[in-house]
Length: 441
View 1 (cartoon, rainbow, N blue to C red):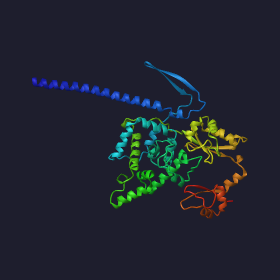
View 2 (cartoon, rainbow, N blue to C red):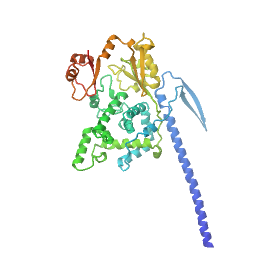
View 3 (cartoon, one colour):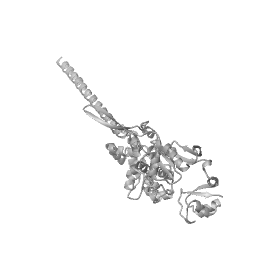
View 4 (cartoon, rainbow, N blue to C red):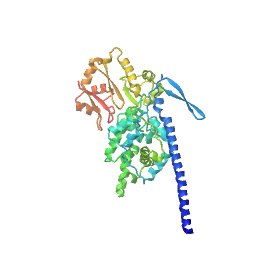
């Protein structure tokens, strides 16, 4: 009987202990959830209005409201601008994260842990990305690329278009001068296309598509080649092949920076895919256009353009880092403006272009990706312009092309080609990807 009572007491004590531990674990779980919620609220309070702050119209009215909390009074400023909150873009990104992960790869694990520990860094790069990310993701998806490609500027430049490497690479995509020249990207005293988000994105994605094809559809090798050059990847693969070793990326002997480059990208993608798993909160980016590119058809003073768009000159320069001077000279003749201000800017530019024309004299095409082009109608064009547009063609320069060869191909006098393209002589250097106007009359 005593033995039975002893066993009964033990069972009771165990039940009491389990109840105690269960209540404590429930409390810890509740505290953990509360902490996560507080972190999420804090991060998004800091980042929710990033775009509003970035693109606040110069004449926006500021109102002040007061929020009362326990023992404290906080004053916060709000604007009359429409909120940029909306459906977040991260769910869309996750649908096309196709490159996978490699948990057994030590560098991958190392970078995942590093990102997870640095919420401040994640806040910073996503804040930097917020004006440009929707446009870049649209372009990546349009080309059928995995979403990881849209995250490459995080690794390349922290999504800062003014980033310059010690080797001379520049912009969001860290494009080298030689690659820019190869694709006909302008670089002069007034403008550097490597810092132009629209132009540099096109060049970067074109080059990545080329590398993807070069390495037989292997995106990991293509991304590594984007970092260190295709020749180094080919050499490393050839060495492994001769040594009868694997030629997959993880087996190659590559420069230190490239060895970290792909694992770092995959690690950041893993954070985007499962932020809660790593205790990270992703700042909000709206899933809608943020910027628009408006063609001005001629050079324009930046300070004057800011007035036409009703934004500050500082804000306009931030969106157009490729323009070095106070005037957008020598082309390309376009400006990037906040999407919500594009119509206003476009209308004001229209008046400057054709002040004596009616509204019907100017037509506008607006694409969803935020690229706005001003097109003069037949009434607004001169007879000469109409004749030129009807009898001209565009030749895209390929490797091995030169001006005499192009002249012979189209049976057009080379002097006309030089005149239409502002080229000095038949020996002028042209680059693959460059557009050459061919006048056929």
